[in-house]
Amino acid sequence: MSIGVGGFAELTAQDEKTLLYRYGVYNLNIQESRNADRVCDGIILIARDALVESEIHRKLTRRPSSRKVIVEKHIYIEPPWAELFQSGKISVSNCNNCWLTVEYGIDVTARELIEKIFRAYQIEGKIPEKLAFDK
Image (cartoon, rainbow, N blue to C red; front, side, top):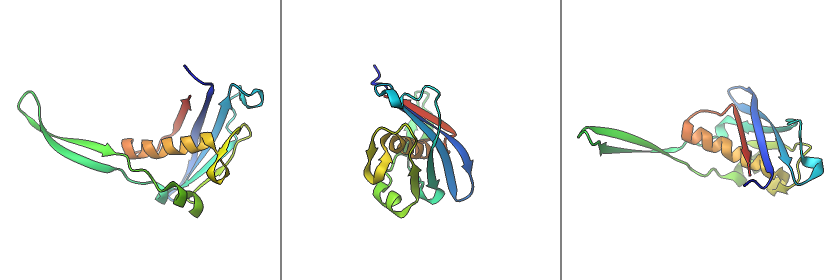
């Protein structure tokens, strides 16, 4: 069951130094923040050198067919969020439907979207084009 809040983001521009995401949020519990048209008016800027590479564990395992194979597992490494926000490597321009902010005046939903971007980059090895979540 959903509590009626969520967000969505789309990669709109990128170069060798930065990533630019447009994002939008909604909160079905607050009339002013419903965002029925799904407007993306917030901006997330991420410096490429802020993206943290995952740790890769390799293990030799035996299959039921007695064949040995190497299995790789990507381990998520928590980025130093405070350092990245303070240094300006991650910056957020809150959208109009923002209903709650966290540290550094950042929209709580934008903060979760940023974490999803970093997690997808580490686990999948590529920068996500679109992402969304509901709570």
